[in-house]
Length: 526
Image (tube, rainbow, N blue to C red):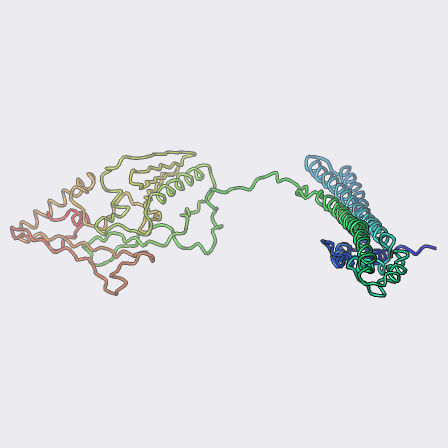
């Protein structure tokens, strides 16, 4: 009755390890004989135990679980397919067709996954059985190496032969060799003379022992070691091939995106102005330049509006409108393009000198010296817009509606290089921060103020009073947070010097009580 085959890899290796006792017995004798040997008993044991620790039972258990999962998945796929068919009978139309197509594609994909699960489970079961069979064959082959003799001599006789090859004459060696060389003991007794014994008995025996070791024992051991190493190498190769096939089966798993519905409507990339009431509460900072009321004192002086520059956001928001008409869309795009042009050409945080700064209002009233770079006009349902881009990057925007109401805006780069939108009052030309030359007056303003100026001069001449120019009060300029002037940082704020009154050489003074007009202040000395 044969012993049962172990079910584990370690049990199989233990069963065949008895073949290693042969090498434990005879390999040391090879070294004692003086022959070279490239391996040892310890090294051969390590080669034999290369598969120790493999758990084929875990592979088989995983294979069973994968098979059960594949069977359960197929059952769920069947129920999903039945539900899809029922849905198709109760729902029709384009949306129904799209939903059914998605369900069918998902069922097909699920069926493919179930097949892959079953294939991997089958590969694991085959790997478990294959590994067990390979190690079992190795165990059987290794156990066949177990033997007590090499070349017809056991370990004791081999040891005596090695001793005889060295000319040993010990009694135990002679007795052992007598079993190998019949008549050796009688030959030793007949040769009573030591010289004759050495020449006639010991030297011929030593030669015959060396010949047996070189021609029988050492070649037999070399062949046995090579055969055992080949057994270990072939086993390791077969095991590696099984694991490679198992990994290849796992790599075949479909990892592409799962079928999903496609959006029929793309996301609306809104480029229009938000409707009124939808602006976030946090966006309360005005993005344009506001013109506060002029100072009430002195009553005879007209103070230019002082622009208060608020820190604009990253992009300039437009004022909300009541509807999203095509005209509003057109205006929004035109203004955004103009803002982009201004921002891209302006230098950030590097304001020009004070004497070179000109407010947008003064730029609009100055003579048009720059060539217009672009002009756009549009009108729809009685509403119209006109957008002009100057060579200096300033943008002029004019709008009007069906009721005849019109607005005029100027868009220019602010101190930080960010766009500033300012409403321009066409009926009263605003003053600039610097006193302008008489030539800067627009023709219509000069013609309208000429009669009054002549009357003032005449009255002053009659009363013998000098003509005094009204001083121009400049509004303080609020510096941006990132570009604070040095004077402000040190605490010494320097106010601009008010222009001194200029007296006429004739000694005539301006008429007392006559209100001064802003145009006279702009024109300078008369």
